[in-house]
Length: 169
Image 1 (spheres, rainbow, N blue to C red):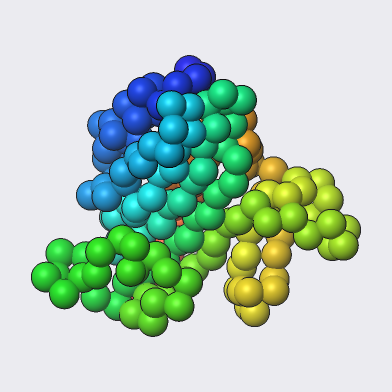
Image 2 (image 1 turned 120 degrees about the vertical axis):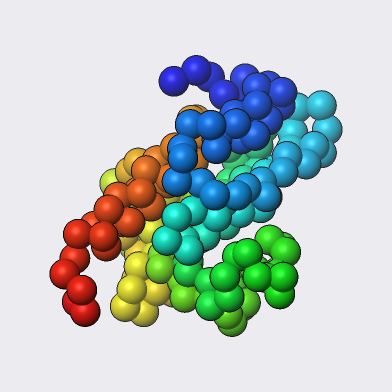
């Protein structure tokens, strides 16, 4: 994989061409917001097949070539994304937005007192049940390479698994 964290321009090309590489992405509202020559953030969401929405928030430091921190949430909306009442990404992706079912989320907030997360500290995934407090290691995530390809493939695998389940299960 090319070094997408080498410059703002390269990372922008990466995020703005994701749909060309992942046909499961139906729509993207991702936007790069610069906060200096070598710093910026990515915000927005990816709407994928099956009504899955990936909310993205990344803080980028191109001087060091790293993602300084991130938050990724995977959910299903109660309102179809094509509906005119569907909220903008900044509203939908708020933690307390009520018209969605959170499937899981990832964040990079450290939990040094939780030995079960040490293997991938600070990268971890929040899962059901008790999604706010139930965390598992996320060794696939990184500060030094883009996380979006892994996250999209993970959602695609979820959709494949769902399509293979017998009806009513």
